Image (cartoon, rainbow, N blue to C red; front, top):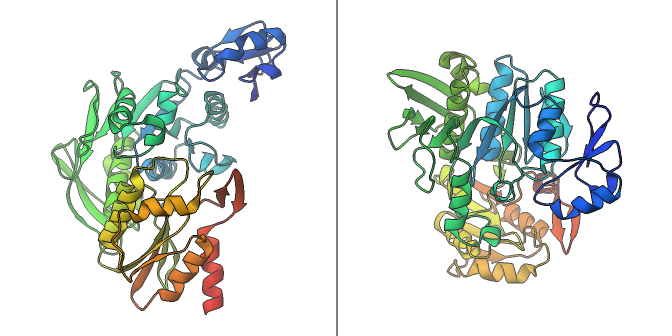
Length: 434
């Protein structure tokens, strides 16, 4: 990747690709490309810089406040909620994460990694500053922390949503995963921690907390999840109320984190923050209602904890759950996902997710280890047929929950990404059924 440095002659560009280097291009050295330093020099590059130096050259160090959010679940929704609240409060703001990059309510980059390579993040920061943004909200993945893909960034606020099992294909053990997440919070900067999350270690200097079950800086005193979310949150001795059209106990945490974060940034009074919360309707692919009659919901949940949060939020309904598990990822979570579905669902249809290089049948076999065979258990490898089966089985007052892919528009099989969108398929199938 190569970006302009504009008026910083004699160097006009910076790149993290050694083959793009020449006498006018700086080579941005990272942990991932350090082995190509000699190649960059061979191509004519006369200066090697790191991410911090790049930010300084671009004048970005103190030009914008960066809010970083990490956690197993809730990053995308919490980040989007903060972004929405700041916009509604009249602030200019950028957002980077799983869904791409947005600046002042306009998409400027498509979906990529949750946390892209540092040069891409720097480009997004540069664009945000050029558009007059005061804040930049970004999701921070455990991979990015472990691979030092956020090195050089100075965070105005760091936020923890939660820590549960995920990415053990990369981190190998839950303890190692927790250690990486904890590493993000070991400095003395401003941080906001989920007080109900025990699997985290953090530097208590400049740390505030939010929670529902335990005493915290921002604490939910009372709430209702009927027809959306309404809640009362206490900050020290004052109590504030907010409402949201969103659903689910887990979204109560996400909204509380967002409200707390914006208050910590001293953007506006708590009353004003709580007043605009209701304008945020949620994120595509996260508890997204694709059809109201019959009720069909699509969600990104792809971990045992993520599934539990979604299933718990609609447990009063009779559930038909369609799900699979991603290939080339943590295999130990597969039977746990099966057990979670069995705990809540009336009918289970196990299918394929993104099998990647694995055999879908093998993945399903491992999921089934967590489910006792019953007449309510169905296996259909073809995801389209599995979704169609769920819609045909759906009775009155039953909910079809399709989990795992959310707003993804493809299915990855043997290195190829085929067009596939759970939501589009549901609408097409329902149109035929009607």
